[in-house]
Length: 396
Image (cartoon, rainbow, N blue to C red; front, side):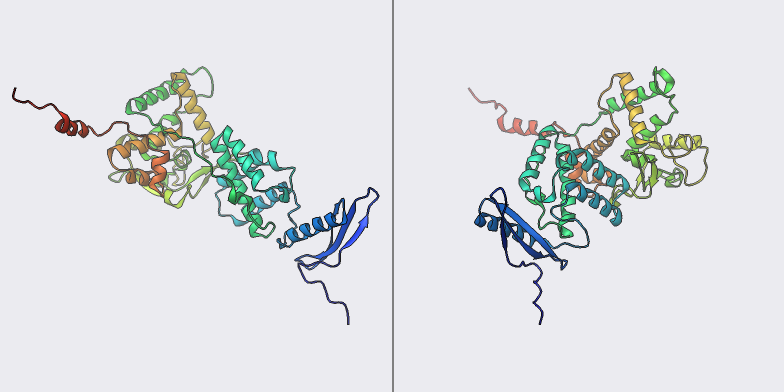
């Protein structure tokens, strides 16, 4: 009868060898979760220390059950990154722009600090220190790095490459205090005037304006749409014959990083698909664009390049900066226009209506990131305090 096989997750007899340098090497054969026997060894100054080091290695090894992947706790972090990016492609539920953002953040923010390390060497303390140091430079960069690190290590845990996610116990990031900014109606008109001046060709440099920027800003002011959503509007999404006229926001423009910009049939979230009634100034801008379009097909884009394809959001931002620089106006971006719309709707109606218009799933997002705080306290307090503390006529 043959010798019984070593059970999975256990090891055989320990062997000790004294090396030429006087140190002791302890070794044994360990049966991994894939059924294979592998030699594991550790070296220390004494036999007792070598035995302790070897058993510690074996105990840590037994926590991990390898799967079909060749990754192990001793694999390099850069190998996990490639494995994670491939897994994102397989899942396929992320928008390509989100997937590209994750990859960019991982490669530019995280990899420079971790690429020479193995997975076993990346613990809670190292991750915590990295996020804190990055947070001192930029809260947003630290937040983005935290997201991709957590996702990559979560995959390693799910696929049983690692027993735990070191990001689970990293200290919470503290958002620095900030107040959303928005344009006033006077400032909006100044922006309009600056764009008109720029579109008349008053700028000394850059490509000749094609007249789309001003109309695009009017559509953003009238719909609260994101820049990508605005550039994805098609002829079929517009109804200027209804009362009131409407636009259906049901896509976005994605691309970049050496890939062409294309229209994606879904916007940022499911809640972002919405039909918006247009104010008169926005409807007028839409009608002007419809008249100017050469392509009369229903799928033609309302705003497009010379070939009929999507405009680059980067180029639109650059054109807006050029127009604002010419007028000496600072800080105007497509996102500020969106915040301006949210603030106006909140002041004239409710935050819930503002959140619905912006396509947010939670009004708290609208309050935190989009609505400029009104510093004016309700003037009713003046009458209340007059009634309580106002001087009273009294008899002498």
